[in-house]
Amino acid sequence: MGDLKKLIGDKIRGTRNLKGMTLQQLSSATGLQTSYLGDVERGKRNTSLDTLEKIMKALELNPGDLFDYREVNVNSPEFELQSVLEVHYQFLKGKKSRM
Image (cartoon, rainbow, N blue to C red):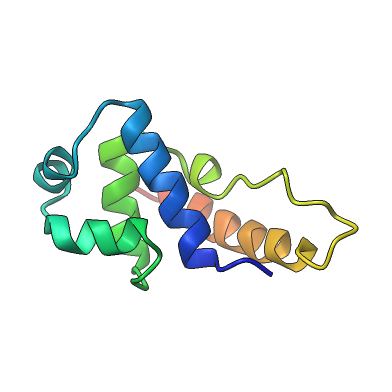
């Protein structure tokens, strides 16, 4: 199974780059330090859901956008990762709807 922190970090970095944002701009938008955000993007940090929510808001991402890894082959050993992501997605979806 792939490293979930790395997968999420890659998704954050990719989205930030697509939006033409620098780490400094993301830092300003989230109130998080650039070094911390860099560690998140490299998969070196465990982040809280509150932190992920700040990052998603700054990048205009929905939980499904961050946790969508449909390229995982359900017949591969990595399928378990898709199950983990679905659980997290459902949790975040419920949290978002209560706001």
